[in-house]
Length: 428
Image (tube, rainbow, N blue to C red; front, side):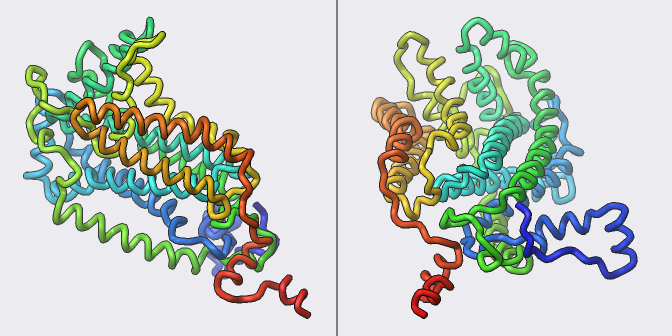
């Protein structure tokens, strides 16, 4: 969005004037994340998570490239090369733990970022392209995280690859061929390890490229805000710098404290002890589970136990991918003109149910497949899909939202006991 009141970049030093004329990178940065980019004045700390996601991606790329210099993608020595990084490479233990826990921190930030978008209606026009690019980034991150989990070549890495790629064989006609193509053979081995290593490395930079597209798309309509009301003038905005660079700095500080606590005090808290055992195709672990950020989708996969028209295994695969693909259609599923759930009580209750279903799926995904847990997983899966396919379309047509403020300024002033210009004029 073009803001006529935005502060314009005016280089002063001769060298900056030269660069601005020949290669205007300083102007681009100034307009993208500096004082030249006005943002709504009422953004809360949930808007920090976009910056935190970018920082987490940068950490993953830097630590990943460094680890790649010492890793050997060979089934015979991959596990030993990881142990060598931990024991013999200078600060190798730090790099390995920073990368492994960085993945968990990255996915935690992404999940909160998605939850914020769902609550505040950030997927609605005119920002639907920003949302769609965000879902693409999420899919790429999931694929990259899965391939990275295979690389240590421990027991859980090997059997995780065996189980997850095995679900592709449920696809009729081409399933088994697709699985063999993915693995480069009939079971995870050197070919699969090399493919996953190469793709894991490459996809990190693909994600960075799509992030740049997302930021570009965001700067066309401008940032959303907690009220869902569009910017109407300079009174509704403040410059990104220094106001939100300072606010983001607080979020970065909290993020780094939690991240450091994981690395230095409990680096294996979110991992699985079986992954410190070398991969053994002849010894199946008692309980195969993916990383915590895959558990809800793994639970959806396991929730289909009865063949109906199609094999249960295929239903599980379709539901697992469908649970993410549904997010692509969200801008058109929710037809309400009101964006923020702050003014939509019925949607707010539905989102609470959705959150509880996702948490329950996470529990079921990591638990044993007892009859009780299978039923809980099926109920949570029904709630998850019911929210997007039944509840939200009906509510968006029938609900009566609460009154929405006329402007961002009015909402801010009312919240803090002030008086808007319109109210001042009315009282006069």
